[in-house]
Image (cartoon, rainbow, N blue to C red):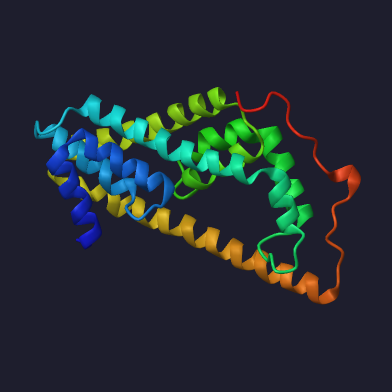
Length: 223
């Protein structure tokens, strides 16, 4: 077993439900340890009577919220206007202003579904908090959607570990290929965006935003 994963599981052994929450909070921001390993182990530990399954679930969900708030705040601080300005710089290769505008409109229209469903998709569950902050999704709505989505995800994996007990690693064995596939697709998408951006620059294409395409600021703020 990977030494990082061993250390994570050792943390749960040491401080129980609090360790579960801390690991899920960390995974929500910088995913070094997949929750597909942490949560089934928490379920296994609960089946052995070492931790309380309901408290482990609550700690995991609160940890997911804590990590999500951090990235949501990053989106708020960065702001759509600043990111739009950066996207117009020649050295910024990830996407152009028009790409950002299209993504912004998509999130304004379907952000609730993206946040809710995104909580159950590896890597996406971390990234999706940033555009929620960028678009000014009300904090109460973001909290509710994140809590529901994360609660379902955490509950399913803790339950699987509880039922499988000593065979809890089978959950990670089946989930890992899906997680790796999602990460690979995300990385390929970033590479494709960067390559396309470079080609657009070389052709001298104008990436200035079209006035009629610029999305209006959302109403309601962050409250």
